[in-house]
Amino acid sequence: MVTAPFVSIVDDDESVRLATASLIRSLGWSAQVYASADAFLRSNACVSTACVVCDIQMPGMTGLEMQAQLIANGMRLPIIFVTAFPSDATRRRASENGARYFLHKPIDAAEFTRCLQSILGSGETR
Image (cartoon, rainbow, N blue to C red; front, side, top):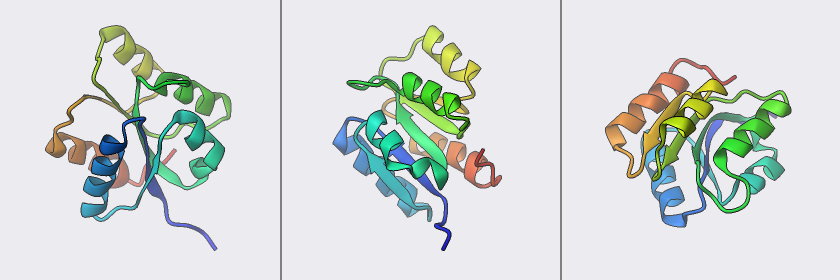
């Protein structure tokens, strides 16, 4: 049995994870939450994840390090990075490695929805 694709949310802030998952579910998509990049990578959710929403600054493995690990494993998932500490260097590094969007916290719900629709609506998952 094949599981329908879903959005994986990786953020160390529980309130952000839950609010983001709630918004995604209200738009009709499924969401799964992870408290760390390590937890996401250990879950094997990469196989059915259509899009990753990931914080950049997290204890342990950062979002950018997680992106590099996914690439090293041959997986180029569409990623929407979110951060409370934006910088041009971080944005550039994320984009060079294939991140689709780079949003500042607190995220604007309408802008975030447009980003998701761009990725999920197009059927792009790899």
